[in-house]
Amino acid sequence: MPIFTDAPRDWPAVDLAGLGENHHLNAVNIAKGLTEQFNRDNKYRVSSFLESMFLDQGILQSHITVDSSNIKYFIFCFNNNEEMSSRFYTGIRYFFSNSENIESVYYSNFELNTETSPAIPLRQFGPDLLTKLGKSTPEGSYLVWRRELDNEQFSNTEEFQLISDFQNISDGIHSYLLAEILRSIKDIEDNVGRIELPDDEYTVGLIGPENKPFILSASSKKGIIFHFHENRVTSRYRRLFWKHFNTYVKELKDYIIQNDIELDNYPFKSPKAFWEETVSIIKEKEANGEYPDSFGLF
Image 1 (cartoon, one colour):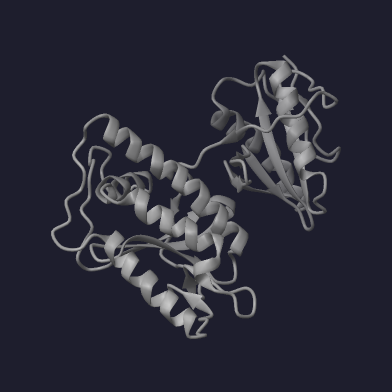
Image 2 (cartoon, one colour; image 1 turned 30 degrees about the vertical axis):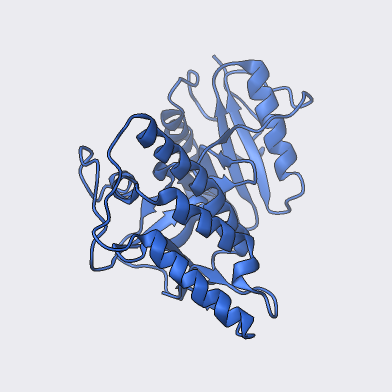
């Protein structure tokens, strides 16, 4: 079975019998076929697998990314449902059409029709999109929020509202949420279902969608919060992170409640109560004309 593609002409032909159901395996096999010549020519480099990108409606996840000196290629594999695959790739091409340094490439068991009506293959946020950083965390400041405009009030921003929503949604399920994240980054065994918030602050460096670095901090006082790299992460990224993360946390809480699973019992104040006290302090300062440059500096 031939492999169809719209890859650049100077990319090597990929010698495969066909694409199977396992897209990760497809991606590995395609990357192997590309890498040998890429290493000789030194013009392109296979840079990552399963890289994700935040959109307002959800998360777009490619199977492979390839970097050149001035263009990043997002590669997508299609192995069945020719009509829907064509619609998906048409939507992906449309999404990237206004970008000067990003292009899409497909590999498929069939030739795709890019003149059809577009759709975008989006997924929801999940802890599998988080990867633990190695020993070295990128240097720089990490923060929850940074002021972008003069006299911008944190309490009037969408990020503030999304963080407040998270504090409400996560109340009662911190132990389950923390365990889900730590299981995903291989910090605990797969059979551990709950991890109580520690009295002493626990921190871990993470890489999220779009390969952006941030730090998760967790404690019995403040709950779970994320501190994003000051220079590598934009306000748009922070907003979309909280938006899609909240959707995931809400679904987790709905599942716990619907199945009558025990909620967390906080010995003292809940993290939600700490956030409410923090909000009062923030708003009081803003009422007095104090507008801090950042919040949650780490």
